[in-house]
Length: 469
Image (cartoon, rainbow, N blue to C red; front, top):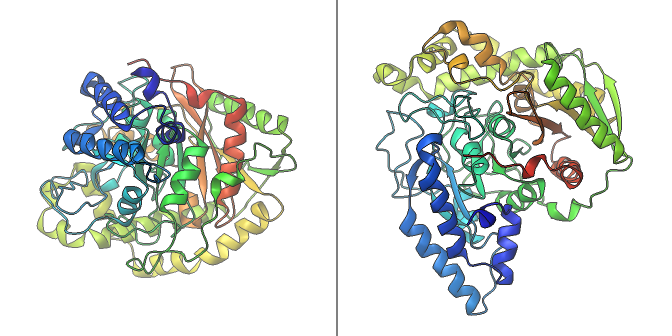
């Protein structure tokens, strides 16, 4: 059983396609892991075991009948509990929506279904996807599989924890300020935020109209490439979804990054960095240089403005989305979420409009300095060592605010800029918690970050390490 759950998503899918393993066996292995360990991790909100077993049998019968299988056929997955499936409760991690039953199914879930993936249920998350640590006052905090007192990162807490704990092979997260990449780095898995609008958001709970992203938490860059190929592309029900052609991302994974030019923006992304994190980040850069890439240190004076406008956009849009509920059910929000949303109502409309109007010029400036002379920008995903749940609980102690917000300092700017960004594991700190490497590229250059992440993972084994539960 443990050998099966150690497979990556693509390895599992390919093994099913070749007849080396059945989908039913994969589902049973995942269910056994959940039964044995989720009592401590608290990653699962809803487990649809019998439906998963039935779906797995259908895949196995289709293969036995010689039918062509989809690229994810037979692979067990679970998803952040904000992806709507018609007729199933979607709590969004909240008290307000604890009994909400949508009438629509998210486009990404339909596309995963069409690719043959087996949906086993839903996963814990920060309330309304509104914090970077994964705390949840309503369903209980999600715990890091590497060490239970530590946070998982948020808001896709259950997604990061379940993939790390080998409960499933892949999980949908969402990313508005780092909510895929943070649990990816903190739980030691791989997470991809595509270019803004690359993946349709139909049937997905919104947080910020212009910063929300749909994407996977998986084991490897190759997993992310296949997952993105299945889920990306325009959707007529989402007029904001990009119409750019969707390439074969796996074909770009050649293993070679010779000649790749990487920029390290020293101002902002390395400010106040923990020495252990910096040492691990530099070692990761050495691996990339050993593969033929060059690394250049640069400055981007616009980073301070980018950081400020990032916060203005997400606060304003989040407050607008929650306005009616905040008027009717303010008592049903966690203390910290109440405080964050109320802050959004104090922002003048002119500040929000300014933040939107400066977005294009600042993206151009960032690309001119960092992504025209160079192919990628590399940063640590997290500047600090992974904190504990207690150290980042601002409901209990508001003095934890700076540490709480500091978790997402390096991820938020890429949401404002809308750039494709990948986080891959690159080491561990002295507490035995993971450290992540973040790679970003120009709009719609997902293939480039995946190529670099895959090359890195071919010569390192950080992504293969498993927590002992």
